Every structure is written in structure tokens, then in C-alpha cells.
Image 1 (cartoon, one colour):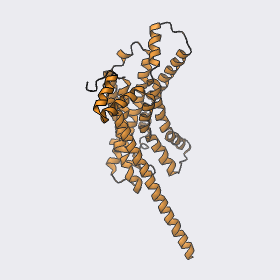
Image 2: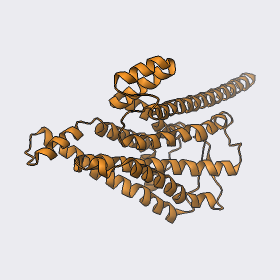
Image 3: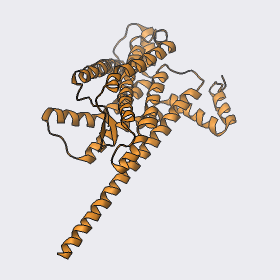
Image 4: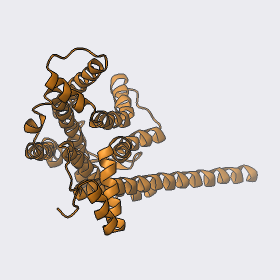
Length: 330
């Protein structure tokens, strides 16, 4: 009898130790992810703002994405570290409601921004001779301001409602309760995902068709248009922007698939680790942009090199800028 009691006590201690180790590991992962998101997106924003040379319009969209990810890293991710250790939310319902609202708003801003990026790339290929007059910096800035304002307004009704916010005690993150607002939730999903998905599929489908047509040597009678088209299609921004969009949907696809499965079958997956993993794998998307930009954008690598040289030694930064015909103080 005594041996059995000691065995049970040993199992209890192991369970407590295991749960504590799991909580520490999850909190550490969230903390590391938050620091990486903040550092990478601060670097992206500083790199673009520091660059004084000729830049593409798409950089304004990339700045919008970086700002959205930076807000996620500053305001959302850090507030999940301590709850991951203790297993509960301690910051109050008001802050929980605001965090849930901010998550949906930033996600909507990102989706809309990807739509505008696809439109920008489509116009660069569809109207290569008129692209610079159609896609001006002022127009791009207006679209970004409209995107942020419209996303903030579209997502605010649950924030102002009387339903209590939900704290996910498996992923340690606050969410708004969309279950009591099924009609509004469906409408919001259509307004956000409908135009974005349709535009992205159509625009990049057209771009890749034109790339294949140009590589196959299909005749284009307008020589001036053919030359401008070839120059635009050679721009790595097309594949880089598509990689950004693809990585976003890959990051969030596990959560989307699981939610669709649960809603269709009614079978809830009772595995806290899976639930934790798919949500934070989606948040991990905020980190991929720096890796993709560094690997696929020569313009960003050049701007990043100038920024690093400017930070390390202003003389070297000035020399590097002069070598490419730029003045960092312009």
C-alpha cells in the first residue's frame, strides 16, 4: 500500500514537472518569436526609410506589411508570454477585447495589402508603358491609408459589443467571440477574403501566363510594348511578391483547415499542442517577410547593405551610396 502511494506521488511530481517544463518551453518560444518579429520588421522599416535612391512603388506596400507585423510583435505577442507560464489571462477583459480586435484588423490589413500588391504587379505587366503614370507614389499612399481605415472600421463592431472576449487557454492568446455574430462574421470574411483572393488569383495568373508566353517566344507585334513587357517581367519583384503571399497562406493554412474540419464534422480536435502549434505557426508569418526580401529582392539587399554601412560607419555608408550614384543625406 505504501509503495503504491509513493508510486502515485512520483507520477504526480512527474506530471507537475512535465507541465511546468511544457509551460516554460511554450513561453520561451513565444518570447523568441516576439523578439524576432520586432527585430526583423524594425530592420525592414529602417532599411526602406533610410534608402534615398530611386525606389519602386511596391516598397510602400511592403512598408505597410512591415508596420502591421511590427504592431503584432509589439502589442500582441508579448502579452501571451506570461499567460503561457501561468495558464490564464491576467490583464483584464478590456485589454483582451482590444487584442482580439487588433489581431483581426492587422490580419485584414495584411490580406488587403497583398491584394494591392497583386494589382500593382498586374498593372506593371498589363500596362508596362503607362505603369509609372498609373501607379504613382501618392496614389499608393492613399490606397494604404484607405486600407488601414477601412480595416479598422470593418472589424470594430465586435470590439464595441457586449459579448465577453475569449482567452484561448491552449494557445494563450485573446480572441473576439465571433460565434454570437455569425451573420456579421460571414459578411466580414466575404468582404476581406472575396476581393483579395479573386484579385490575387486573377492577377498572378495573368502574370505567369505572360511570363510563359514571353519565354515560349510567342510573337508580340508591338515592339515597344514587347520591350517594356520583357523589362517588367524581368523584375524580381513579381516572384518575390508572390512568395510573400504564398508564405502567408501557407502559414495560416493549418489553422484554416483545422477550423473547416471542426465546423464541417463537428469533431473538435482535443490536442492542446496541435492547437498551440497551428496558431503560432500562423503568427510566424510575420517573420518570413525579412527572409524572403533578403533572399529574393536585390533592391532590398542593396538598401540593407547601405543601411548597415551607414549604421556601422557613416563614412562607409556615404562611400557606398556614392558608388551607386546616391546621396544618403538627400
